[in-house]
Length: 295
Image 1 (cartoon, rainbow, N blue to C red):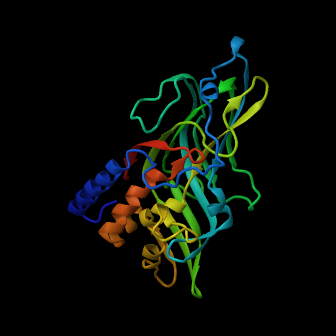
Image 2 (image 1 turned 135 degrees about the vertical axis):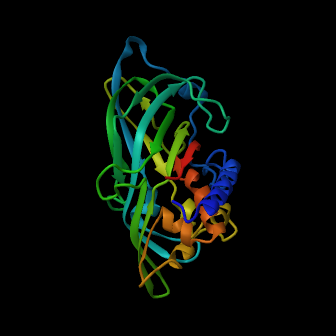
Image 3 (image 1 turned 45 degrees about the vertical axis):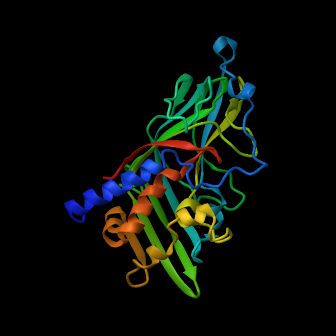
């Protein structure tokens, strides 16, 4: 993804600098609300039950209401997604004791773990406003508390998003102007996350039963949230849609990663790169972003 070699080096350095500030994905992200529950120490340290009994662990991917229902960006564009494909590989759920802290800089040490084979491409925009987060895979797993989840985002090997780790397609509308858009991202990312933070407990697996784990994607970090104050940290750190709208040709935005590097301003492209590592969460729980590769 190069315009020319010298600029690529410059952009890469700036991207790395931005990523250094975002050692984990928590930098500008909103904090969990008071209704969200973090696990108690006892819950976090549950391990596999005696006798090695097992249950079914259901791995889900959630783009939240922003993706399924549509939303207003920080700069006033109404976004409706038709499809938002993410390509997930090396999905690994783990039981850790002590609990893994993604902001500590320490490596994850698993007492037990299970992995999902192959690469899974899911459409986060699938379903209506009442839809459950998309089921990615089901795996047999030892009973206990799964309090860590890791995955990579890699270019899809086949299907509608082939060649890209993220494929966003939909329509943006503002003041009577309607712009169909397709944004294709081939950067490769990897996330290592701690315990799910949200209204419900997740990952507590009882022998003979099923439990959910969730990879959550915060695309409001990229576009911002028009319902939040302009000076909210979420919005000041977001790119918004206006820089993408400016790339429209014949009323349509259709860009991939090389085009974004070539056509966005240097500041906006650097911001775009710095936002990608903040997309992955577990509910409102944070993740350590361990890899950003531009292909």
